[in-house]
Image 1 (spheres, helix red, strand yellow):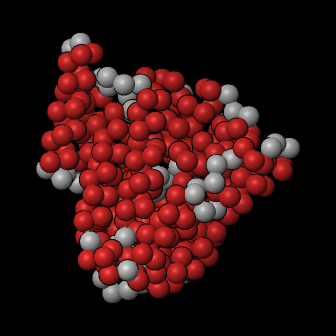
Image 2 (spheres, helix red, strand yellow; image 1 turned 180 degrees about the vertical axis):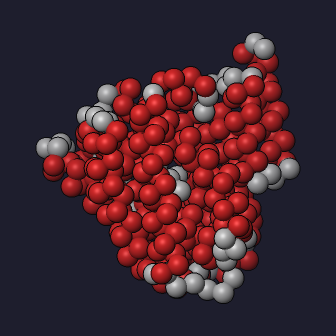
Length: 314
């Protein structure tokens, strides 16, 4: 199929996803099918230029459906448990890199992506560690593939374990790499689970600031190079407006629904960026390294869910 017809097909499918208000998981599945069966009409870099900003807008939109007291309470507990997991993953990443013989820069990128916030952490860390293009694309590829897998299997595992919506929200927020996949997974357990998972995940994202600062000092790099996630400030502003301004309280459901549609579009674009060439480009050892590290993260955070976190009864 020619590129012209691929682009037409792309926009038709995109319109159908929006009009039907398909769930985020369907967005990812559709993107993956399109990419593997027809090939994406756009490069990964071009897609990233769109799904990056859209993701931030969607996260801010979710803030309009949250209450400031709940966000503060969840954020306080989330800071503790995400710090615990951060320490576990950083140590595990250091040890596993030696086992799989992964070069330091690639290992740091994949480890930071697993510990903090997937592609965003990798993008922030890459100039600090002075990563080469192949190292950056390898780390991104590993994280995006594992994100897609997590979105599909985490809900199934949670249902098998008979987890509550709040338990799953904590687990997804701590163990899934990117915010988009956290939202896509948590949305399958209802709006309360979605709100909780988003708040905990954004608490985890904030660790990018101290981790990047330490890395910059250790690597003797310019600390100003890393990206601070300013959109979290707009998310908190949305929470405040929703909590105290009547207009935003009455329109919260509209903002939430628009955000869900945006997350579906984001995951559709991410799915399009995953293709067969990515597997060849990254190699086996980095993928195995990232997978084992992610399994450590998933099991460790699951244990934390059952031992350290308090939950609402939903």
